[in-house]
Image 1 (cartoon, rainbow, N blue to C red):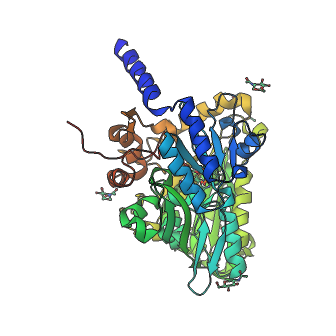
Image 2: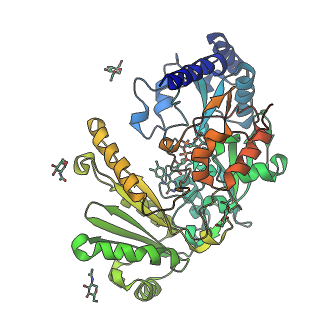
Image 3: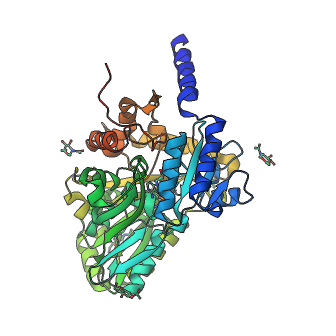
Length: 482
Ligand SMILES: Cc1cc2nc3c(=O)[nH]c(=O)nc-3n(C[C@H](O)[C@H](O)[C@H](O)COP(=O)(O)OP(=O)(O)OC[C@H]3O[C@@H](n4cnc5c(N)ncnc54)[C@H](O)[C@@H]3O)c2cc1C
Ligand SMILES: *[C@@H]1O[C@H](CO)[C@@H](O)[C@H](O)[C@H]1NC(C)=O
Ligand SMILES: *[C@@H]1O[C@H](CO)[C@@H](O)[C@H](O)[C@H]1NC(C)=O
Ligand SMILES: *[C@@H]1O[C@H](CO)[C@@H](O)[C@H](O)[C@H]1NC(C)=O
Ligand SMILES: *[C@@H]1O[C@H](CO)[C@@H](O)[C@H](O)[C@H]1NC(C)=O
Ligand SMILES: *[C@@H]1O[C@H](CO)[C@@H](O)[C@H](O)[C@H]1NC(C)=O
């Protein structure tokens, strides 16, 4: 016990002496910002609009309470130069920056700090342009755009083009792409990161770099390694993919009485081995399993495929819903949104099973930082919602269920997906003002497996002093001082 207390005290002191800048440097930081960035783009805590801007993309009210550690200021850049200026001011005056695109981080790390810390937020909401190059089948998209805006803009240009990414239209491109991007086109075309060909970022020196300028290791790291460790990504050049003018969607529910257990059991093998054109995920909640599929083809061919591969579901042509691919992106969101009201939930939640296999499994596990490739059957997302007071019951359900599932999933490590951020699996310890590699390994090898070490080496090259840091950023793998 005594040793523990001493360690805790030492940690507290080192935090205070090294990473929290004095009030004076906070003031100087703000002065520096207002010299270089138009003042209407900088919201200080004293600004009347500060709270409105802060909450504008907070998706989890739990992360905005009276005790939440708030940023010193929020910068809303309208051009790359403003982002560069914010980084230079932050470096000069010892104030860290967190970057926010769509604000969906499951731990709110883009706008709150779990530890007492002085930091600024760079909110990219005003950098959201999208330009499609139909002839090249590529597009440049800014990090502040949502994936729904991206889907819409691509489809309006050419309804047979699309981009593989997630299922919730309000996700921000910046956080979503830098962490992976799984969705309904993934078995055919992979994750978002498998289809990114260039990017522009501001590095820890405040330089604006494209793929050539940053080099291949740095470009590798931002495609799935969690962008916040490696700079501020402003925009991405993406390779668009082909979809037919009409796709076929179905959603079929089965209750326990209708054999849900056996059908889900069978799905575990079938889902990841279906033809690439067919992605079928499952929502399991209470007494019911819902199978939701998007098929890049016609109803008759889907019915034939389902009859051959998965007769247990008894899918027929009356289940088919033909629509454009764009319409299907809105539909899967609607289905997800019907997760239930807090009153219906009663302290328990649900799991979403997202099948892998197909193209995802064919990409070697070191090609991008996302290592969950060959042999992975599916990813499980554990979700629970709660109205204020029932938080404890809901969280207990979540923790107990997650523990229970430990017997049935990957082990050593129990794999995890960085875009489903979870601080319960570990947080960095900071020693001499740098996050330690050993502490990062605890959570990092679960997200990135063998790729974690390479990410830490890239971090050492591009940000050796650990400027871009939060509770779960990749630490620099530095040679130990003797
Ligand atoms: C309702 C909901 C549905 C989801 N559905 C899916 C899904 O279908 N598929 C899937 O793969 N994931 C899904 N996710 C997870 C989602 O991909 C991640 O939460 C993602 O990080 C969100 O990105 P954001 O820009 O909205 O979040 P933010 O909170 O803005 O950012 C998330 C993290 O990325 C960093 N970051 C943000 N922008 C940048 C940038 N420009 N440069 C560098 N770092 C940056 C932030 O600092 C933060 O650490 C879902 C999440 C929610 C809440
Ligand atoms: C939070 O602050 C508001 C406004 O100051 C106050 O009304 C409310 O009671 C506080 N809530 C808690 C839980 O302290
Ligand atoms: C589609 O892309 C082409 C080529 O980039 C462009 O000329 C055209 O204006 C775009 N059309 C729409 C509707 O955005
Ligand atoms: C599926 O169809 C078969 C015969 O076609 C039937 O025996 C079975 O009960 C059906 N299963 C469900 C869950 O409806
Ligand atoms: C909700 O939970 C309580 C306590 O666990 C239980 O008694 C009740 O039956 C549950 N209600 C429903 C609708 O599941
Ligand atoms: C990739 O998979 C192989 C075989 O399972 C494993 O030995 C290797 O460590 C993995 N690499 C990464 C980067 O996870």
